[in-house]
Image (cartoon, rainbow, N blue to C red):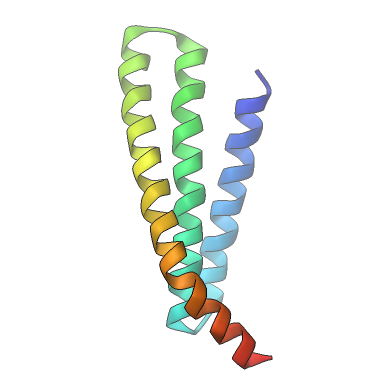
Length: 99
């Protein structure tokens, strides 16, 4: 059962990392790309947090709350993934220009 807390901790740390990088970056395109990466990690965090809470308590209420967290986590990950794919090619062109 150490797997889910480890994934939760790593995803939360990466979410914070990308959010700090958004604040440090001045370019709007880079901010959008990094924000989409942060959304993906937030979705992973919410998803595994919902699973972990159900496995921890195993009640009907924790099941319903866990299902809500799973749905929200998948939606957040999906939105972040779509945005990341959208901004990825433009972000790579920007990085190549800055070299």
